[in-house]
Each structure stands twice: as C-alpha cells, then as structure tokens.
Image: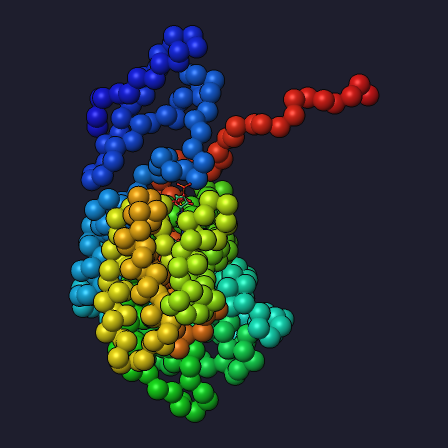
Length: 426
Ligand code: SDX
C-alpha cells in the first residue's frame, strides 16, 4: 500500500491538500480523491470520466497505448486463438480457466439451461413485426426475473453460479427468438446435441425439421467474436450495469440496462452503423467525400468503427478480427464492393493526419460488422451478438461490486450552471 501522496494547492486561498496515491497491479496508479469535497468544498470535473477510475477491479485490464487487453491476466489473442468462448466465459465468471471436467460440465449446464420458460413467448407475441431485436431482448431479459425470482437476492456462491449460468445460457435463446419473432418466422428451440455457439446459429437460421447449413469456419468465427466482446473494463454499458448493481438492483435488471446502453451507436450499435454507413457510401469513388465530412468540425458525421476512448494506437481485438475477415473473404464471399469501400477508408484513416493525430484507428466494430455480414447475420442482430459475448463480463462485474464489503451507491455530483434562486415571494 503506497504511502505516497499528491498535493493540491488552491491558489485562491493558498491552502494545500494531500491525497493518497493507490497503485495498480499493472497500469496507471490512481489518486484517491474521495475526501476532496469534504476537505475543499469543491468537486472534480471530468465529463465522460476520461481520467476517472470508478472502481477497483481484477477482471479486465486494457493498456490503450500498447493495444493490450487481458481477461483475468490472460491476453486476448491467446484466448481467441487457443480457447473457446465458453472457456472465456467460465474464466470471467469464476476467475480461472476451466479444466476439461469443468468445461464439460459448464457446456452441459449451458445446453440444459438454454431453454426459456414457455411463458416468455407470450411477451414476444406483443411485439410488431420488424421490432428491433435489441428492444425485444432487453424486455425479455428483464421479464426473466419474473420467472426466476429467487435470483432477485443472491446470497451465496451456489446461487451466484446458478444465476450466472442461467443468464449466459438463456440470452442466446432469447436473442434468436427475438430475431425469429421480428421476422415473423417460427421459433427454433435449442438442440441439446449442439454446442453453445453452434446452437445459437442453429436457432437463428434453421427451419423446422432441422434443415440448416452450418460450417465449422462460421461457428469458429462467431465463437471468436463472442470471446473478443466478453468484457472491456468500465465501458459505458458495464458502467450502467455496475450503477444498477450499486443500487442493489438484481442481475436481470442490470443486464437489461446494459443492453439499453450498448444499443447506442457510439457503443455496441456501432457495428450495425458501420455496415449501414459503408452501404450508404456505396462506392470507392465516394469515400473521399465522407472522409472530408468526418474531418469537418461543423459536420456531425463520424466514421463508424473508428476511434476509441482507450485504444489510441490499435484495438487488439480489431487485429484478431482483421485476420478472420481475410480468412473468411474467400470462404464465405464477403461482398467485395463493401470490402473495397472499407479497405479504402481504412487505408486513408491509417495515414491521414486528422485520424493519426487523434488516435482514430479501426476498432472492433469496424471488422465485426463485415464478418457478421459474411456470416449472413442480419444487421439488426449485430448489437445482439455483442450482448451474447458481453453478458459473462457484465455478470462478473455485477458480482464483483456486490462482493465488496461495503457498496457505495453510484451518485456523481455536477457543475451547476443553471439559474440562481429566482422564486418570487409567495
Ligand atoms: C465500443 O469503451 C469501450 O470499451 C467500448 C467498446 C467495448 O468493448 O465496450 O470498445 C465497444 O463501443 C467501440 C467504439 C464503437 N463506436 C464507434 O465506432 C463510433 C465512432 N467512434 C466515436 O463515436 C468515438 O471515437 C468514440 C465514442 C468511440 C470515442 O469517443 P471519445 O473517446 O470520447 O473521443 P472524442 O469524442 O473525445 O474524440 C476525440 C477527437 C474529436 O476531435 P477533436 O475535438 O479533438 O478535434 O476525435 C474525433 C472527435 O471529433 N473523433 C472522430 C471520431 N471519433 C472521434 N472523428 C471522426 N470519426 C470518428 N469516428
């Protein structure tokens, strides 16, 4: 425990204040300013929390400058290449990679718990055709709490394990059902003989009586995408989940809120926006026009799939996905027009001073959108894929906060810039 401090001097009254430095296992130390308001009568100000740590965590670590990402100390490239998504989900939920017996048991748990209560289907019937699957999924997850109400209070390891397995296993089924309902298609129940990722593709694509074509390269590509999305420190949707955890909200409410936050196109909705933007640009000869718009401060247009709050050199997940996209190119015939536009944008962004000086490199969403399209996953399901991958991370983060000896409810302050009291005499 460091005894070092940082001194803050207020040049208005010459007073100085000492704040302790807390050191990380790896990465930036923090200045503990929790007593700052009490000592100075002032708040700190940090819109979007660009320099603010909201919690202690031992789940995920990102080094934005080095383009490094670790889940519980394991590098993302190792997990993506050598392990499966279920290995990674188990690691996030339980703290260590599973041995063979633990993985087999976890995989059986996922198959067994993949079915949802038949009552949930009535909820789906309420939605109109073409309802966005993220809206259906968010409502469906929240509704699960009415069927599994004993999870509303998690008091021990067994209850945590059962809740975590239940939510991770049921979200792909809810996700596939959400899509099938939104298209007016018959739902396909999970198949106990298929693995986690294969089962999701099967429920999404199959027709009754088992007609479906699933290639190993597709299953592996999607499994890797789930792994790459599984957690990412205190991003916006994880912050939403932890905020609900701090109010003692149950996991279904927290995950439903995380889905809502992730849906934003600056966050998990970006991969759907990437494809829509590439389709809108349409051809290589229109790319320069939109690059100019992205650089124009007066123009709200932004290049979807570029930039990241933390990665200012490259997003290591994008590197893994770029390799998969290139492997899939021949195999699955990603539309060449779209890829040519994407390649032109990427080439410009990697050399143009505007992007390079701001550290705006292709992020995970730039490549995941192209791969998901090659896997014939509908655009409106892209953010849903992100949810399936991120759910183990959200649950691990929800649980980490709840395991703290004392939980402080998330309640930031503000810089008030409104009217002074102007209440008339009355
Ligand atoms: C995800 O946080 C996470 O970990 C998220 C995520 C996860 O796994 O959970 O990694 C998943 O959300 C990835 C990001 C997906 N979003 C997009 O691809 C949408 C496009 N990107 C931008 O919206 C933006 O880059 C953000 C939101 C991703 C990051 O925004 P920041 O860190 O708040 O950066 P900023 O808005 O302060 O921008 C810095 C500068 C600004 O210019 P100046 O004011 O300095 O002149 O870069 C510019 C911005 O205008 N800029 C862009 C741009 N992104 C930032 N200019 C053009 N196109 C862009 N995409």
